[in-house]
Length: 243
Image (cartoon, rainbow, N blue to C red; front, top):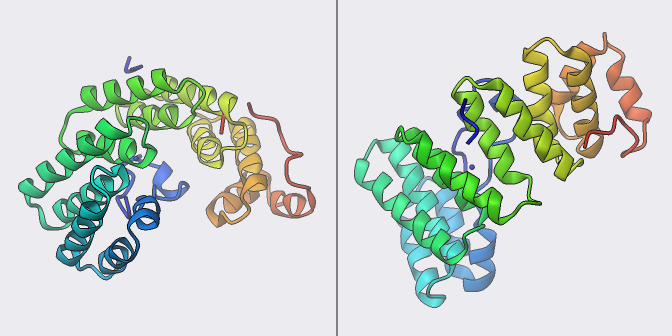
């Protein structure tokens, strides 16, 4: 058993990608520290001008040497370039920047996710698992490492460990919609419709802006779930205990 997270980097979870919002790249931290260069980098990235984005983020890094968010921004941009253009050198550069970020901020959530995705994409799941397990050991109260470990377990076909990691995540943070939705998806796929419905309902109470989850609730509750949720105060649904 395998028990061991950029911009628009697509989650490779087989079914969760329909239910879980893609993990965002964290540009905000670097932007707050370095001002216009990071803001310009974000704008250029969104326009698909990756070379311009890299140049802007490099200037931001020069203004704040060693800033982990700036390293992450550069890694995320090169990672995206590698995915779009198939350039191995960009992938290597992305990994180097991710490691520079984590050397300065070992628990950087977005970078942990980005590096785990890169390691899986380059067929190094054992390294990804080891990295995330170390993160979980450093932050035993943080559900995010467990959510990422669950994703890898599911990719490896180990649904039992994936579910166990998500149960742990929900125990740590009962109001984490990402963990709740992912747990609901696994339970739905194994035929446990009632528990899946409870997870989806709780996730929707916490964050109502999830139309796909709302559709799941409606389907699993026989068409009446959406109406009930609309009148139920947030926080009063089925209690599922991580963030």
